[in-house]
Amino acid sequence: MTITYKDADGIAGMRLAGRLAAEVLDYLTPFVVPGVTTNALDKLAHDYIVDVQGGIPAPLNYRGGGKIPYPKSICTSVNHQVCHGIPNDKQLKKGDVVNIDVTVIKNSWHGDTSRMFIVGEGSIAAKRLCSITYEAMWHGIQMVKPGIHLGDIGHAIQRFAEGQGYSVVREFCGHGIGQVFHEEPQVLHYGRPGTLEMLREGMTFTIEPMINAGRKEIKDGPEKDGWTIVTADRSLSAQWEHTVLVTPTGYEVLTLSAGSPPAPAFVAEAFVPASPAIA
Ligand code: MF3
Ligand code: CO
Ligand code: CO
Image (cartoon, rainbow, N blue to C red; front, side):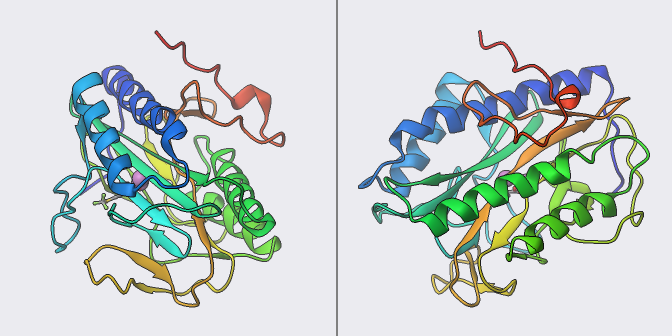
């Protein structure tokens, strides 16, 4: 497998898939309240993607390397779950922190994005972890332009997150994305400046740091479902994800929608594209 560089048609396809993925998160937002089950959120997302957007939920039946097919249409990772939590019939309760990760296939192109949700009123610790993780993602995003290296992105994320007293999960990374869900390159959320692949115009990949309040180590969840990953020390974990395009001068975030939280103040204005018009 090699890195794919998108032409104008590919970029148009990625823009649409990306916006649709973000709009699924917008649609789900008012439903993320105490008492809702993650299965209910999964059904809402599935039906919205299929019936309203005319798309396909990429996770459903997805097989990672040698894994059992993923059984649901979104990932919902609660509290100390790091990623790939499988929706179930347990109700969310006040104070839970939940990552909802949505990947939509539209016209064969993939858009992949996730956000954190705090159910009802959250603790100061939960709010801080979610907002620092959001900033960590943007520290990575704002590095993106032709000529920099993937190690520059990882370093920016790691330096910021560790500087805030948190740790960066090593075992999962961002990824190239296009007509394939997970393609080259791997986008590590830690690293050294100037190392790894050089970015070129037309690359599309995700930046999706998983940040732990405690230690970086992870393990398989007690569910033994083949997917759910938890922190080894049971500390809270957060994640945000955007899909980005490398443009001639910088980047374009492909997974923005009307409901996307604004970029942090430190992000250079010139590099933030205008919010896409919502028809
Ligand atoms: N959306 C996840 C990512 O960001 C991948 C989920 S794979 C699944 O790469 F099968 F668990 F859905
Ligand atoms: Co994702
Ligand atoms: Co991803």
